[in-house]
Length: 401
Image 1 (tube, rainbow, N blue to C red):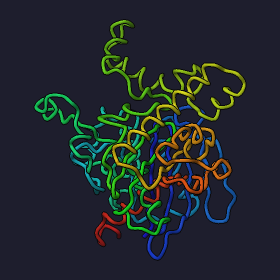
Image 2: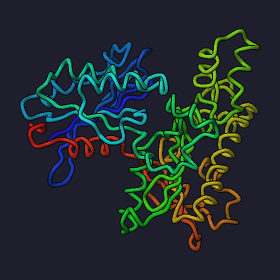
Image 3: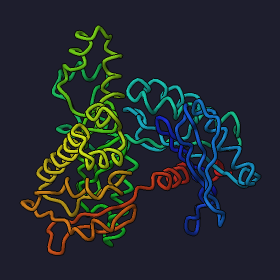
């Protein structure tokens, strides 16, 4: 069957059309960049050269329309071209714990959770509605949830230290995010190691504009850095990550904001962007650091230090691990970040090989030194493949057309 995987970010829309069955073939795909300002559609299909062109995409509905128009133009939407559409949805709350066929009730449930993932659930809903409006009932849509992988968190990791009755009334708990990415890294590592997923123990790092770490014990998520919302945990491109819980109220009081405005500061104007004062892009900050920009240097140093703290704490919680796995745009490409995260970790048996690390840019590769007791690997994340597989597995033969 042919599955169109849709993966919405806050200002991007990645997509891929895959043929699943005997093997997995990529029929076409790409990304809509910078939705809302200077948007562009970058695409590739078959033997044709990749191309990029400016488009009008003020929101994710227009971005979805541009994707469908490109697929139609290439003959990929004709009969038998798309059997189902899979959507990544960031927050599934307690209700959505597995891939789910989308209907009006499911849409309403996802909408109710939008306040917990304001940068992502809304765009995903917009894309889902645009797909359903264009393709109608003839094509089934499935939502696969980032939070689902973390449903195995034990209470000691998944609960906050607050009154259980209060938590129960409002479904307050640590849900975790980037589940598709962490699951993909785990499954791919197991495949490379020639071992069942249930036998691998890892610390996985999804390091991009959004960042998270996960402790995986025997293939199951047992702790993760993001919590009730994606704001908790590691320092990110524009998010603060861990802060004193009273900070939002403090900012609101001192700046004359309401709480929502204060949370927007922590979500949109903090992290690498806030500390550096210039960018949330790690590539730009590493260049600025080399040029002597002190604020950029501080931002990079804080970022690497906080990732290293989480790696160390998760290795302690797991009692060791088979490997630390780097994924995401920064994790897969930023050689200097990986080096600084792992610096000084010889005490626990983790040591990088400088030459291997330098050669691993956007490619799958081991980067640990020979003799390192804990492995280190770069594994490029393929969320679209996970979305497509989940979609196919979720549908009955009748729903697959």
